[in-house]
Image (tube, rainbow, N blue to C red; front, side, top):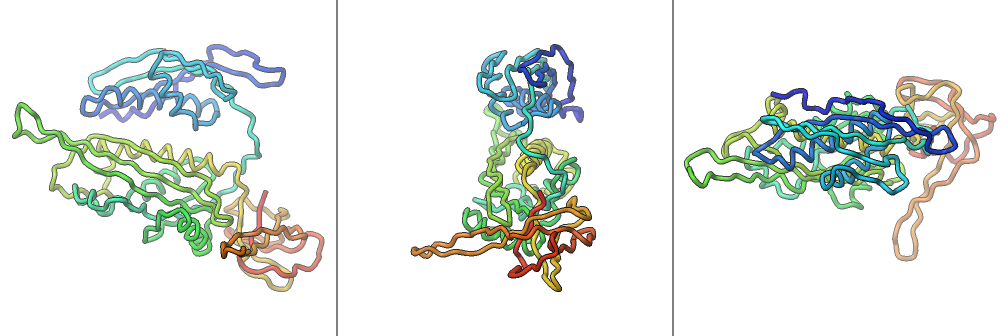
Length: 386
């Protein structure tokens, strides 16, 4: 109905001023966001349109989007928001708010100056393995008989990452869910990283997917209006060192257009074109941006596959941005146990630097840069391409 409601960017350079003695400039960016009014909830539509406009301005300016929710909440309470913290956004103003029959358009402008990156952003592709999200209350799947919803959700995420012009690739989805207990998450991340040759593991847990149906008080025989919620949390884990790079909750609600006993195919295009499906896709786009932002400063990490004749084979290649002559560092992992029986991972930097001498699409061969001997190196030791 309103396919254009994606939040078209209408950037206009209104003013340009020198912020410091260096070459750092701030500019006013104007952007527009739109959102459907679902079940008459104008406040939610206004919130979604405002956040979309802020996100578009931040993305266009090349700034971090992590503060978009905070800025949205502030702008909903007043028409202008002065940000005193030393961040990338100094001021946000609402330019206009236009209501239509079934959607709202919010236009904002923001005084933005992107910070200089604190790291060299890597263009190397980082591979992800994901699992279907675990579910707190599987009985909530009974309304609509959406037993495959958690798997369909990850497939949509995989498709969104595929079409995102970024530095991550979701190459594998396991046929099983994983435990949501944090320590188990990290153990499983390490195991799946080895199994699927993935640097990152992404897990999710659905907290709420309930349906609320409201029967008309004046005509109880009419079909009740229904609204379905979705609240979930994701974790992105480095499979080499088990570091949690992203741990964030997402939630949404939207009209549920199906009857109580109607079986819903969550893998169909029809479902993902429904109001509920489109609202989920909006959240998925946020996840993709959050994941890309979380790993942009992470070095590309790979594992040693084999060692023979003073040569090391690794699971990084051209697809990961590796080139002939690249220099990599080698780390050896050692498990330590304290007097309480707790286990710790210790990473020891190998004294030899490694140089790429042969390269294929997804693997490479390396030798010591100075021609020395490579002793005590084993499969599953890991290399880092800075």
